[in-house]
Image (cartoon, one colour):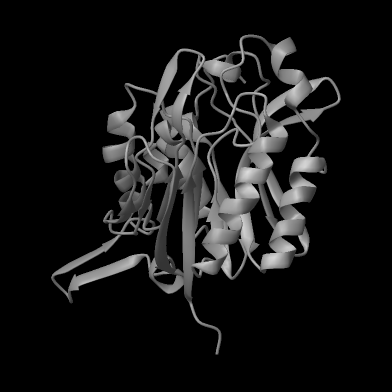
Length: 282
């Protein structure tokens, strides 16, 4: 019988701005280390292949690739050799369009990509195009994975939609700078608890383009408990074991017949209309 337990790893690293080859080499090294330590799914930060702090669209474009480009193919090959799945942030070009994206890849190739929907006025996000694809969940290594990126998590609708689509695990590559500490410490456990899912928030460290990035990557369980929590300033790998059966058990029976909670069945969508009213941005 297939086990519902899967070991995952979060790679908190410091990418170099515009240093794609060096970043990829570092990522492959971390991927190998995580695999040797037992991980089946390994997640890297936002814009891990390129860095984030570009000062213009023109500056960023030379470091963008298609979703079948060298970065994806390099990581696919490494996953094939190691027998693991990886999710990582990269800049995606598609014709004249430019996206802040996340790729999910494994031994068989690219499983899926996601384009960041919510864009803050920060770093390369000032210049990329808004994501134009619906949220989606992908099967990877026996886990239903939902991808979103950094600022997306500040909109609880994102995690809820991915969870309603069946996600067991929400992966969140981030580039949180100073002033994002509450996102790291409070928001991620809340997103996990309110959706009864595992969440991996994987941040970077170091300084780039005048910003210091705060680390504090984490892996959180469906009750909102941190299974692993990283430092503020070191490259490191976090490990944890997740159990898909726990994430799929939405009804929480704390005292039978007296205290039972089901955050999905207890929803009242008929009252949520204002959430989806147009605001002129779409």
